[in-house]
Amino acid sequence: MKNRVFFLVEDIEAAKLLVPDIRRLGIEDTDLHVIANQSIALEPLPEPDIAHRSDLVNAARRGALTGGTLGLVGGLVALTVPVAGLTLGGGAVLASTALGTALGTWFSTLVGVSVPNQEVEQYRDRIDRGEVMIIVDLEPEQEALFTGLMADRHPETLIEYGNLDAA
Image (cartoon, rainbow, N blue to C red; front, side, top):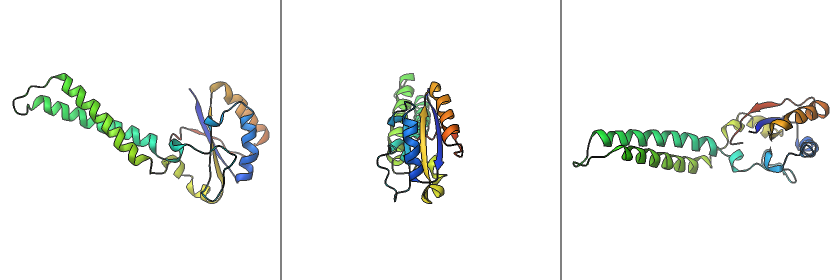
């Protein structure tokens, strides 16, 4: 399982110097995301995907939990209060829970793609001032190499560990 690290560098030039060092560790662009304010061109740096730009992942989790709970409650109500003389069994509870989970996830992701990633938003003021966030997903065996690289070449950089799922 990959561990996510993220940090901010002072500007796009610092990011352009750092990213090739990170790539030399064998980290692919799919595991490397650079986030900057909209006035900064990221080319040739790897841009964040939809999951990192928006609140998609967190919204899907919340929607699945809420929809599944409502579906379960609805199924239990239908089981205990028969409508029109119909007797429903445990399958109805499972079906309503599954349907609620699916619909909750779907509706929430529709909203989540239009909402900025809330975990990145806490750093928005720094990003808007021109700092650049770099997110790296590391395999456990890459962590020591990455930590050594950062300590050796970029000791001033404060590395934070977290999930930043939707960055």
